[in-house]
Length: 338
Image (cartoon, rainbow, N blue to C red; front, top):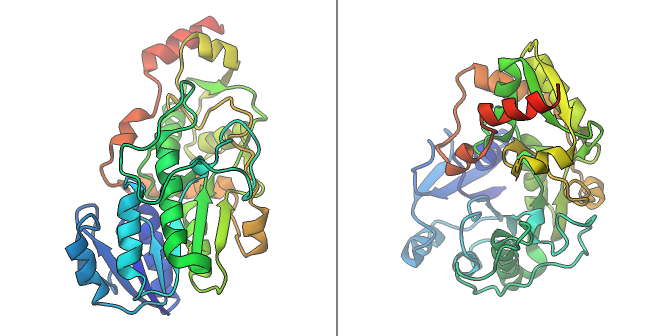
């Protein structure tokens, strides 16, 4: 199997490359060489996908059985379209990492693959879309929907669209799970967003990588929601963080109304907390039927802590600084709960 990975040096892209090499595949990576080092064993091609001349030079390195695109999260649809067209004659199949944010109903309603999508043309630039007053829909979601359309327009039934919700695990660059782990380690009274039984569906980066490779080797295309089929409760998630860090802290549960009163930012100040009914109601049964297998979330928590303790550091990314509540603000809220 000859595989081209767009990206390939950090988090999901790195996992894809490592697992592909373990399968004995011949792997080419294409990136700027700025976010990490290449995995030993790949054929590395340097270039910027925003430049057509770099894509043309890459195309001359082909052919490939499949492309897995892990590097389009910050790109406008028109850049995805240029890349797919440049490689259409050199690759038989395109696996595209997208997001549940492409759904018009996210995060308000339960979702399946046939749920309505946000509307964005394949040739849209970075100005297309908007973010709603309550944080949904998002401009990001519009842009990713346009990127999906670009892939489908070029690769047709050989386009695979993977729509994860939240991806966690060793190497995480966003900082959601690492923040909770470090907060648990600090102990004391730990502010936790009620209700404890709230269901979550985070998926491990290594399981997403494995499923992406399986789809690269498959023969049919289509869209797949890639969320944890069993998931975990918020209490189970936080208790796992407390256990692996050997914390002597105590979880103090605050009702959503109180957190809103104190203007706690959902999704970031208390990472992974959001009150919308559909945020963790994304059906992944189609992916499961096609081979998605997810390890327990508690295992992801434990192995991420192992990575952190081994001086694991993600690539520098601005989203890391967005996550976590100020200790003084947390203390004020906890004081109101005594």
